[in-house]
Image 1: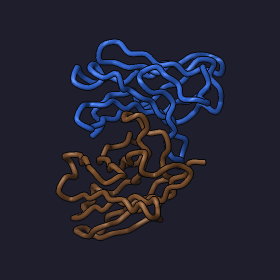
Image 2: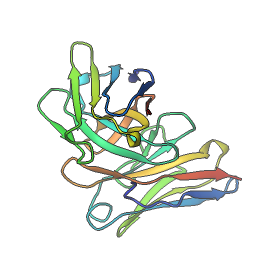
Image 3: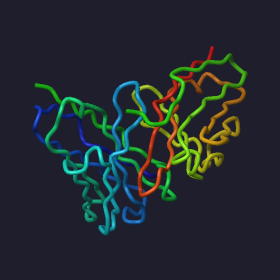
Image 4: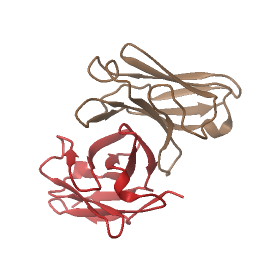
Length: 118
Length: 110
């Protein structure tokens, strides 16, 4: 069955960087793009961007462009999110989600809580 | 931060129906065939409930239905069950690989 398993919680200081991983199984990794989103408590998600897992394109939200990188390791079927220059308002649960049909997200990781605090 | 507007809460009695709205603009919800809905239980990852406005993925009960009129999409849950309690949010494609989300609605089954 399809599974997306993310790395564990992180606590970072303002200005630091964080790297979140999303290890997939149960499907052909390069046949689906991978999206990254984040969600603050009690709110809807925020779109961060998506990664073409066959390596030919990335699309980042304007809100994080310049601070974010999304990459994939096809040898381990794992996607990665790097976020730099962390600020307190980056505190959220970060999710990877498989893009299905180009416009919706059919399988999600369990989420990774990133806390930015001095 | 949420661009699509949803009511923060909704409720209905067991067996009754409830409708949750998701309002955007003519540039997103109004223009898009690709509006989807997600259900999320506490401390769990979201699950896809509806896509392309009114299409249910395999395994989603037909008690869930979707529609759209103008700039507002709606999710209706009929025959409310206790397991329907949770957090619901909408999403709309907004062009150029961009997606917008609603702020979410907490559904309570009375």
